[in-house]
Image (cartoon, rainbow, N blue to C red; front, side, top):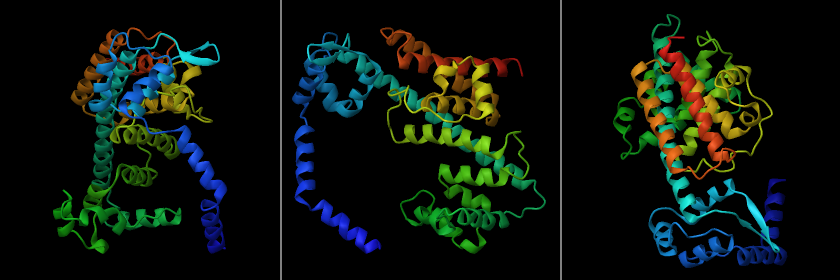
Amino acid sequence: MGSMKEAFDVARLNSDTHIAEVEEFKKNHKKLNIEDQVKALKDKGITFHLISEEDAKIILSNINYYHKITLFRRNFKKEKIGEDSKYENLDFSYLSKIASKDMQLRYLLLQMCLDIEHALKTQLMSRISEDSNEDGYTIVHEFIQSMTDRGVETDIDKIISIAKKNENYQHNLYSKNNNKDMMPIWVLIEFMSFSQVIELFLFYYKKSKWLGLSKNELGTVLISTKNIRNTCAHSSPILFELLESELAYQPNVVSRFADKSQIKRSIRKYLKFNDIICLFYAYDILIQGKGSKLHRYKTIDEFYNKCKKDLSYLSKENPISMYLDSIKKLLDRNKYVMDNNL
């Protein structure tokens, strides 16, 4: 059956109809050189009053690339001009500034995600160390078996595979602990990806639920945190299509946290707003070090204040403004709780 499908797919890809469709698509979506990119922006109604076309070319050649920087135009409205729709009051400098703020935001959020990853490992190892029913080896095999039972292709070899390479920073650790039948959890965890750490944490968490959440609630929160972590780590933009992708479900614990942070129900139903709420919630319940929290909150507060100044051209109704204001509300709520020892 599989071979028949493969043969059909090959035939389809080689058909004259498909080849013609591909050529037509390429014709309508041509590669643009830097000069053409500036022209395409002008055709969309984007102006170059605050940044000259020549300076824009330098930015597009050396600082940011066309596809990424133009994503942020989706936060602005178009107006009908004749038969065309063009952006109103949108200068290239606006897009360039938003791109810069997006990068700075990603760096800040990634630091929060890394703190959370470290906290997950710390809490997990602390609990296992004090668990008289756990020797640190049994849990490894039980965890791998649980993943297999769920149909997830995970084994110890897969987890440690990258560390087998000489150029990997963990190679020496691997070479001293390369017997997968005698792999303790305190070694294996150092080879795990963030996704695998989350899976392991949830696997052990279900025993005692020490954070007071159900496993499903915590899992939903951590998956949202992972969404942000992966986006930031792969240098993918955040501040676009913020009012897209509505969620069918939001855990009550997240909804209550959003209520306390005074975030409107009308926006927290969207994926990116939900994820940022979950990130701040996870940070609130998982990070124990007061100094770490204060440092992170201070830098985010400074970033927000800088955004209000540098992006003053954005209206309150602009999705970026709403997203940044939500971050500020989440920040203020967490700071208030910490300052008052609540």
